[in-house]
Image (cartoon, rainbow, N blue to C red; front, top):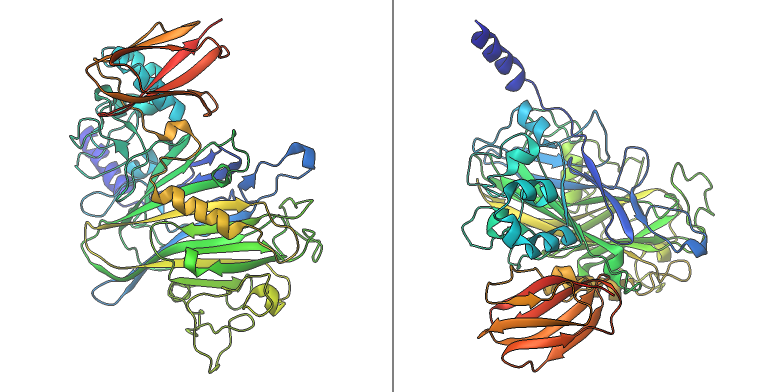
Amino acid sequence: MLLFSMLSLMCQYGFTQNCNSPQSSYDLHANRIRARVLNSGTLFNNGISGQFILDQDPNAGLDNASTIYSAGLWIAGVDPGKNLKMAVGTYYDFDRTDFWPGPLGPDGTINIFDCNNWDRHFRVTGNEVSDYIGQLDYYKNNLTAALADFPSVLGWPGTGNPHFSAIHGFSLPNTSQDLAPFFDADNDGKYNALKGDYPAVHLKDKLPFLADEIVWSVFNDQGNGGVHQISGANALQIEVQQTSWAFSCSAQPNSILDRTIFTAHRIINRGNDALYSCYMGAYVDFALGCANDDYIGCAPQQNTFYAYNQTAVDGSIDGDCGAGAEFLTQPPAQAVTFLNTPLVKMMAYQQNTANTPTKSTDFYNYLTGRWPDGTYPTPTGTGYNPGSTMAPVDFMFPGNPDQNNDWSMCAAMLPNGNRAAVGAANIGRLLPGESNELVLGWSVHTNTQVPCNIGNTLQEIGSVQTAFNTHFQDVCSIITKAPEPVPDTIQIFPNPTNGAVTLQFGSLKVTEVQLYGSDGRLVKQWKNLPEMRATLSVEDLAQGFYVLQMHTAQGVFTHKICITR
């Protein structure tokens, strides 16, 4: 009788009740940007105010003003029956969502128990990974200590992790589907930290790499039959695996990477139907401090759209800026860059007007480069010119704001207003089980000088793209160079040391040794080392922890050393 009652409850609540709205959020803050990430298809919003905040120089007297009020992931496609399916994120809202927590099963569904279990973010720092790998020989024989000292590494939700449930109290899906990304030391496809695997960012066609902070979550648009309350569309039955990361460049205060965070959105079709005419993109409600005096522009050649301030003084046009803090000096520009796929459409509109999307066809039209009524934009004024004989365009306001002859909001002298933008990529067809990925760079650019000016924004965007193209291997943070377990053939002693450190490496060919401070700066470098053994002087360095890197024919090996005085 008891078993029957339990089964009845499971049937009533576990399989028929819609999943609860997602609640989890995490503030990524490894560098000068503090950005709130959620697992609901929404970013940078807490339901009240914008949460994409640049840490300012305290001597400049600037408020902690946000540059984005809210952002969201938009995905749409058409099934074989030509039915539109869609899921969108706009603002954090406890009661309204198109997404719910958790990975979908092989049948494209999820139950309420799994939704509740996965309503969380998984976070790890590069220093934690480096510390763990540097002591792997000890921890691989001391599971209890490993679980206690490094729960973020041992509990990472990588496929097949045997220690996941010991940390989190529930099990990973009993399938071979990919979950959180990791460096697979033994290439067996399963995550096991005791074998040298560790959390990492692993993008499509890229080498795995570390960052100063990595945050991962997974959500879906099926929600055990949940109704899409924002778009009103039918579910695509997609799973979204979201990785967010940042690099600390405190030793290089002018580095654009210290003012950038990255998000990767891996989209997997878990349903039985192929999806056609698929687009995915980013919705951004910009708010450079005061939200009512921002202009929006686009740099199609750099797959970027951005916002800049209409005037030299934030909030000077309309003093009613809502709950957001204002910038007390010239506001920065905020850019969004599609790093791994072309930006094919960019639309911008004023909020709380007839062009604000309210139903599924409105959202899909914006993703495909049209106004809600189906009109294509034309390059004059606001871009909304029904009946115009001008040729339609794919990108709104692509002109340089400094040039009056280019089509920009500044040249068009548009009135003040609260504006949003949608940038989209065309992914075409998505078959059952197939995945695609959208990688975005969210960067703040402080070299703006006068109204309608974006300073060196486009040049800095080029630096962000270059870092992405080169697998982030040459950025300012030392820990981006993924640490490898030190082979048994390498010995490093004494450690701690107060004058010199000896490296013994046998027949292994060592081409270079580098020593980095705890802030990521290169402090010493040795080349043309002798064979088998080298003694390196560190007596001129201050007391503290350092990262030693050995560049060898077998790869780059990282180890921490301690200098005492």
